Image 1 (cartoon, one colour):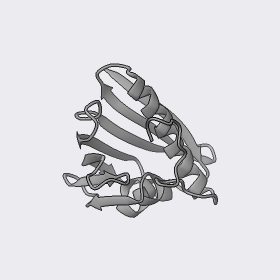
Image 2 (tube, rainbow, N blue to C red; image 1 turned 135 degrees about the vertical axis):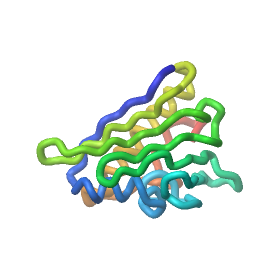
Image 3 (cartoon, rainbow, N blue to C red; image 1 turned 90 degrees about the vertical axis):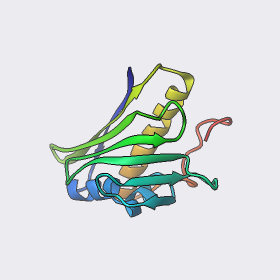
Image 4 (cartoon, rainbow, N blue to C red; image 1 turned 60 degrees about the vertical axis):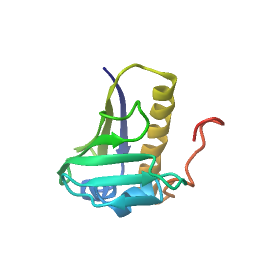
Length: 149
Protein backbone atom coordinates (compact mmCIF):
# COMPACT_ATOMS: atom_id res chain seq x y z
CA UNK A 1 0.00 0.00 0.00
CA UNK A 2 1.06 3.58 -0.65
CA UNK A 3 0.30 6.84 1.15
CA UNK A 4 0.17 10.55 0.44
CA UNK A 5 1.71 12.55 3.29
CA UNK A 6 1.93 16.30 3.89
CA UNK A 7 2.90 18.60 6.75
CA UNK A 8 1.81 22.23 7.05
CA UNK A 9 2.34 24.69 9.88
CA UNK A 10 -0.47 27.15 10.65
CA UNK A 11 -0.23 30.30 12.76
CA UNK A 12 -3.62 29.73 14.40
CA UNK A 13 -4.81 28.08 17.61
CA UNK A 14 -5.05 24.30 17.55
CA UNK A 15 -8.78 24.45 18.36
CA UNK A 16 -9.44 26.66 15.36
CA UNK A 17 -7.54 24.35 13.01
CA UNK A 18 -9.43 21.32 14.37
CA UNK A 19 -12.80 23.07 13.97
CA UNK A 20 -12.11 23.83 10.31
CA UNK A 21 -11.30 20.18 9.59
CA UNK A 22 -13.94 18.60 11.81
CA UNK A 23 -17.01 20.67 10.92
CA UNK A 24 -19.11 20.77 7.79
CA UNK A 25 -18.95 24.57 7.65
CA UNK A 26 -15.17 24.49 8.03
CA UNK A 27 -14.80 21.93 5.25
CA UNK A 28 -17.02 24.08 3.01
CA UNK A 29 -14.48 26.88 3.46
CA UNK A 30 -11.43 24.64 3.08
CA UNK A 31 -12.20 21.90 0.51
CA UNK A 32 -15.46 22.42 -1.41
CA UNK A 33 -18.38 24.80 -1.04
CA UNK A 34 -20.97 21.99 -1.03
CA UNK A 35 -20.85 19.39 1.74
CA UNK A 36 -23.83 17.35 2.93
CA UNK A 37 -24.21 15.16 6.01
CA UNK A 38 -23.24 15.28 9.64
CA UNK A 39 -19.74 15.43 11.01
CA UNK A 40 -19.90 12.97 13.89
CA UNK A 41 -18.35 9.54 14.38
CA UNK A 42 -20.16 6.90 12.34
CA UNK A 43 -21.92 9.48 10.13
CA UNK A 44 -21.05 10.29 6.54
CA UNK A 45 -20.10 13.49 4.73
CA UNK A 46 -20.70 13.85 0.99
CA UNK A 47 -18.42 16.22 -0.92
CA UNK A 48 -19.67 17.79 -4.16
CA UNK A 49 -17.49 19.47 -6.80
CA UNK A 50 -20.05 21.00 -9.16
CA UNK A 51 -21.89 17.86 -10.20
CA UNK A 52 -25.26 16.44 -9.15
CA UNK A 53 -23.64 13.48 -7.37
CA UNK A 54 -21.01 13.61 -4.64
CA UNK A 55 -17.45 13.18 -5.86
CA UNK A 56 -16.55 11.47 -2.56
CA UNK A 57 -18.36 10.20 0.52
CA UNK A 58 -16.42 9.85 3.74
CA UNK A 59 -17.44 7.95 6.86
CA UNK A 60 -16.27 9.75 9.99
CA UNK A 61 -14.05 7.22 11.76
CA UNK A 62 -12.63 9.49 14.47
CA UNK A 63 -13.03 13.00 15.84
CA UNK A 64 -10.60 13.60 18.70
CA UNK A 65 -11.00 17.27 19.66
CA UNK A 66 -7.92 19.35 18.86
CA UNK A 67 -5.95 16.20 17.93
CA UNK A 68 -7.29 14.15 15.02
CA UNK A 69 -9.89 13.92 12.26
CA UNK A 70 -10.01 10.57 10.45
CA UNK A 71 -12.25 9.50 7.58
CA UNK A 72 -12.73 6.32 5.57
CA UNK A 73 -13.68 6.76 1.92
CA UNK A 74 -16.80 4.73 1.13
CA UNK A 75 -17.69 6.25 -2.27
CA UNK A 76 -15.72 8.18 -4.85
CA UNK A 77 -12.91 7.52 -7.29
CA UNK A 78 -12.12 3.81 -7.33
CA UNK A 79 -8.57 4.54 -6.15
CA UNK A 80 -9.99 6.28 -3.06
CA UNK A 81 -12.55 3.67 -1.94
CA UNK A 82 -11.33 1.89 1.21
CA UNK A 83 -8.54 4.44 1.78
CA UNK A 84 -8.31 6.47 5.00
CA UNK A 85 -7.66 10.17 5.36
CA UNK A 86 -6.19 11.47 8.61
CA UNK A 87 -5.50 14.98 9.81
CA UNK A 88 -3.30 14.83 12.93
CA UNK A 89 -3.11 18.18 14.70
CA UNK A 90 -0.39 19.11 17.17
CA UNK A 91 1.46 22.09 18.54
CA UNK A 92 5.04 22.75 17.56
CA UNK A 93 6.85 25.85 18.75
CA UNK A 94 4.67 28.85 17.82
CA UNK A 95 2.45 27.10 15.30
CA UNK A 96 -0.14 24.38 14.91
CA UNK A 97 1.05 21.54 12.70
CA UNK A 98 -1.27 19.48 10.52
CA UNK A 99 0.10 16.09 9.50
CA UNK A 100 -2.09 14.81 6.68
CA UNK A 101 -2.10 11.22 5.46
CA UNK A 102 -4.22 9.74 2.68
CA UNK A 103 -3.39 6.07 3.28
CA UNK A 104 -4.05 2.79 1.54
CA UNK A 105 -3.55 3.51 -2.15
CA UNK A 106 -3.07 0.26 -4.10
CA UNK A 107 -0.37 1.72 -6.36
CA UNK A 108 1.36 5.06 -7.00
CA UNK A 109 -0.64 5.97 -10.11
CA UNK A 110 -0.67 9.26 -12.01
CA UNK A 111 -3.99 10.02 -10.27
CA UNK A 112 -2.27 9.57 -6.89
CA UNK A 113 0.34 12.15 -7.94
CA UNK A 114 -2.46 14.52 -8.95
CA UNK A 115 -4.26 14.02 -5.64
CA UNK A 116 -1.06 14.61 -3.70
CA UNK A 117 -0.65 18.01 -5.36
CA UNK A 118 -4.35 18.80 -4.83
CA UNK A 119 -4.20 17.89 -1.13
CA UNK A 120 -1.19 20.20 -0.78
CA UNK A 121 -3.24 23.08 -2.22
CA UNK A 122 -6.11 22.30 0.19
CA UNK A 123 -3.73 22.43 3.16
CA UNK A 124 -2.12 25.66 1.95
CA UNK A 125 -5.63 27.11 1.54
CA UNK A 126 -6.43 26.11 5.14
CA UNK A 127 -3.30 27.91 6.30
CA UNK A 128 -4.01 30.97 4.17
CA UNK A 129 -7.57 31.36 5.43
CA UNK A 130 -6.67 30.90 9.09
CA UNK A 131 -3.75 33.31 8.83
CA UNK A 132 -5.91 36.17 7.50
CA UNK A 133 -5.82 35.49 3.77
CA UNK A 134 -8.44 33.75 1.66
CA UNK A 135 -9.72 30.21 1.90
CA UNK A 136 -9.53 28.50 -1.48
CA UNK A 137 -12.26 25.84 -1.50
CA UNK A 138 -13.76 24.64 -4.78
CA UNK A 139 -14.74 26.39 -7.00
CA UNK A 140 -12.10 28.98 -6.03
CA UNK A 141 -9.33 26.39 -5.72
CA UNK A 142 -6.12 26.29 -7.74
CA UNK A 143 -6.53 24.41 -10.99
CA UNK A 144 -3.46 22.19 -11.36
CA UNK A 145 -4.28 20.33 -14.58
CA UNK A 146 -6.29 20.83 -17.73
CA UNK A 147 -7.61 17.25 -17.60
CA UNK A 148 -8.44 16.89 -13.87
CA UNK A 149 -9.71 19.51 -11.49
